[in-house]
Image (tube, rainbow, N blue to C red; front, side, top):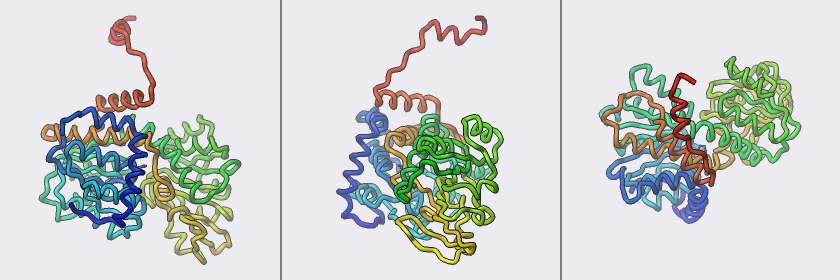
Length: 415
Ligand code: ADE
């Protein structure tokens, strides 16, 4: 077995965390167990570039149980739970991940899992897919297919495909209803506040919370902020999403105008430099800044670093930047994805759906790769529906069956 982790002695702590996630991810467990003694991934090498969390450990162990040889690296240098890395490593997963990797170590870990010559690459954010496509070292390797977990990653893959450079089919797990409706909205909504509250321990009620971006992630954050009795203001660039935010009862404003009003700013756009110097300079003393997007590019952290008189760590994950205008701004987790840096990521009950889609998509690629084209596919509807059924069953919710008469009615054009 290969790998590099922080501390193997954390394995038993990791096992407790794994067991907690396992118990709370019944739909994923059901998906794994639905294969019985079959091992549809026997002989397959799967490279996973995911956040190394307790939820990911259930997926990794599930892939192993289906016969795969699993290689795991982190999807962010700061999100690895070292106890989980140790537990998975003790169970025969080849883990190359530790919390606090520098940029070079982060990409070198990704290269390590790609060097294993995987048949399938599972990614979150597309750093592994892009590294595979960019590094000469991998130009002769053949890959059956890949999967991608996030909106940001799917956007990058579509650009790669549009440039005619995509070398294998990829299933956009992010685009399954049973992924984005729950993970992006309820998962990020809750876990963003989990991170924000663990880091700051401050009250949200009565504060002006500015949510940048009203995609599924932004919607979830705005909803949770409202639930905590914040005054919520949304910024958007897309007219449809802005209109939706307005109709959902939020104030919609320009970032340039709301910069001087907000108490807490949370970015969720997938875009670069959404909060820039011109905004930071206008902000009130004591403002909290957090990012919920995949990459640490949404808040111009370099501006803060270059234009502050001082920077000091005031709490775990909270840095105080003293601007030349005398205002102090508090940045959470260095502008990296707040829910995974300052908390444990999405709860297991949403990850069970996202990861059921991942697992079934990997099996689908393993079985059908020869008939797939080198393009980005959505998750097959049959998989999405199966995941929804499993989740409902796990939650003890029964739904009605369509009657024969209704089926006929829905297929006729005459009433
Ligand atoms: N992305 C967001 N939350 C996550 C979690 N709990 N595990 C893995 N990836 C995640």
